[in-house]
Amino acid sequence: MFISSTDFAVMLKIFLFFLFFFPFLTGCGTSVRDVPVIPSSAGLPQKTAEPGNVVFFDNTAEGRAAAQREEKPLLLFFYLPDCSNSKRMLETVFCNAEIQQLARRFVCVKIDGSKETEYCKGLNIKGFPTTLLLSPQGKEVQRLSGGQTADQLALQMHLTIQSTAARTTAFGVVR
Image (cartoon, rainbow, N blue to C red; front, side, top):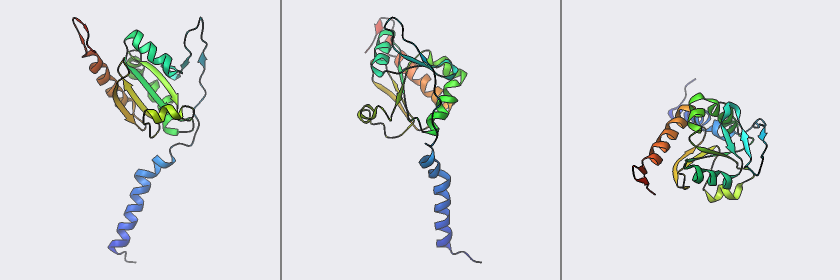
């Protein structure tokens, strides 16, 4: 059987579609495991304990206030409960030892895109998961779309820390 060059080109395009693009279309099909909520005491903000001891605020306003108060950059993690890439990041990337160490230098906020649709639209979140790294004042430093590996996220977290630290001089904070 002989395959013409046009038939081969069509078959190659179909193969490449399934190889590279199909996983992105079907990536969101399982649910994120329920994680415990650390109870709020004395009016403290609600935080969620994730595997690997990375602690996320559940409320963006509280997270932003904490970032300003503590002079720490923000990590906003936008996810969907049924997205397998979101689940993978929560269960593996945020359990990585280097990410755990770096997360202590950030205020981390986890945002459910299925519940916070208007907030996601306002920040131009077009896909999940998306990670925004912001300065303590709330200015976007880095936007990471799609699932990230621990190495990819760690690199961007290091760059964000350096970027926000570069604004500090011996004479005080430069804004």
